[in-house]
Image (cartoon, rainbow, N blue to C red):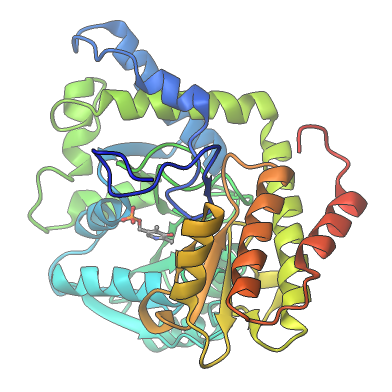
Length: 406
Ligand SMILES: *Cc1c(COP(=O)(O)O)cnc(C)c1O
């Protein structure tokens, strides 16, 4: 039955949001966002902005990096990073990780940067030797920065950030190391200071459990020094103007107060659970999803897109389907018949892949529900997957789950 105001049928119960962003928003975050905005002189505004900055520094494991929050999505944060660090015609190296590295490269190119790439090998993480070779070949040190994506959400592959820093150091090249943590922060450990990462970009709607609309950059002293000398024209995004104690300057105008209230509440939840527990819960739930995909794969109709088990993301799993199977139809049936919302293939993976998100405000029962809906969708389409996916996930959880609250 459809209601007068909506063409979609009424659905009782919960819809399971398992897209790898936006992810499920906890009730505490929703509630925090329903507060009235405040007059900008109210010290409470400064307090929740400071709470967000503190929360980000703590998750990033950085003591002193400057944090800049924007009323923007991840693309906005990419643009902010690019325009603050790379002047027109200057060189930036973007290692291939799949769709999100491609998109960042397109954006940087459109902004006048000279973009160098290393190839993406489908199913594999970043080719670290290729980065080292490009840096060694740049004898005049013209490359200003390496822009690497930690977890590429389209290929569901996580690259080894500490190892990239070691290769950069081995090459002796002074380029800045910049990392996109949109899909990884809050799901897997990140050590900005210890790994020698000079700047990061991220967004609110994935591991940070907040609705879409907030992007951020963090920059260490070396990145700030490059920013200060960079001739690229800018105003709204400019870190030099935003580095201030005044909230109106920090945001180049009115802060996006309700999103910030939500993000502060999300950091409160992370603190309550304990960051180590948050990260081990992600590992556990990813293990359950991987166990199910392993079981489904045995019939030969689906398989992991990421071929390297250690590089499979704890945030999202991309699943390749055999030719002749339409992943968009799996998505549609999962959504409309089983109330499980999953993602499709992006870029080169469009029409070949579906993706199950498993990051943010999730527990074991939610993941089992999602796996059940996806398995049921495939079965109802006649895609043979053996019927053991949920069973294996249950088995995995019963063997590995020691933590309360999961
Ligand atoms: C989602 C995502 C982005 C883009 O974020 P938007 O908010 O959609 O602009 C960038 N990088 C990665 C790794 C992502 O997962």
